Image (cartoon, rainbow, N blue to C red; front, top):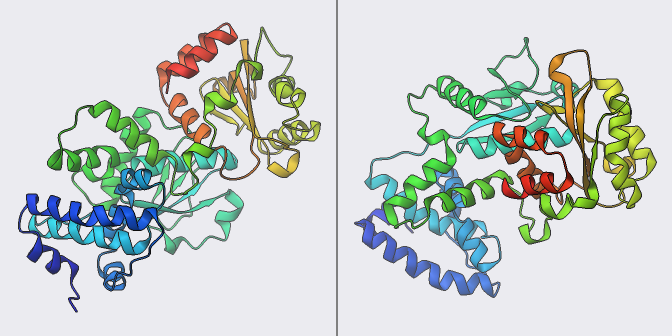
Length: 385
């Protein structure tokens, strides 16, 4: 039995053309095995997972196009066989994958904001696994030795590991700063491997002619932004599916932030997506925690827990001509209030991912706040993704 998959791959894949041919030879029967649910045991799997975990994880992330083709997730045995081919190429090119590092998120902005932040960070860093998403209370009992660094929306002066301060919605400038910080923390001179999409594009260009690089980059961004779950995208409604004209309201002003939240949630209440108790719960959370729902300049996302009174998944939006104050600070002046009613931890993630991409662009934010009618708001939402 050969116990070194890199040595195995190097013997049988002496050049790139041979690698491509050998991959194709494996993928053809693999397609039919997976399609009809026929399992194939990989006798080298345990050795691969022990010695070459980084290559295995990178291969798993890169298998998405093939998984979409067969309509199923590849099991560890199939991923292991593919990793053998890529490992052989890495050895011949004298290339080593980036050491995987563990990170945690501390976010005081609520569960939805935490998930949005996690999605953005996983999209940004290819070699970082987010192993924990914590509230400030959870952090107090968290064992920091489990991670290499912490992404936090608030300072953590007593932390024993590096703390990288972040906003719930990352702008391009924020991302640039984070990439540089991670490079310094990890002791790297280059940030190429930190940029997941660019790294994958570079690999693809070595083996294939790309007809539409912008389209490929968009698809990679979309895939990586939804995290590591395996709920079919076809079953997750998009932002445009949920945020219809019926769910949008345009008003001149609101008496105060509480009234703004109630007005923003009214379409969901009228359509039976939520109970009145859900609105009270959202307001109570802001009263207890402060304006944590203000996630971007002029934008607030109000939400509660499913058990607070959610009946059906939904999103609504209120656009105010005159900003409403969520605190005395200028940065808490809000014109757009979104209300998210989630029924579980999965079904709203596609819409939330699209919303994250929208709010991450300064131009999109400006145009959204300048929109004066429901039609203009819908047009902006549709044109941004």
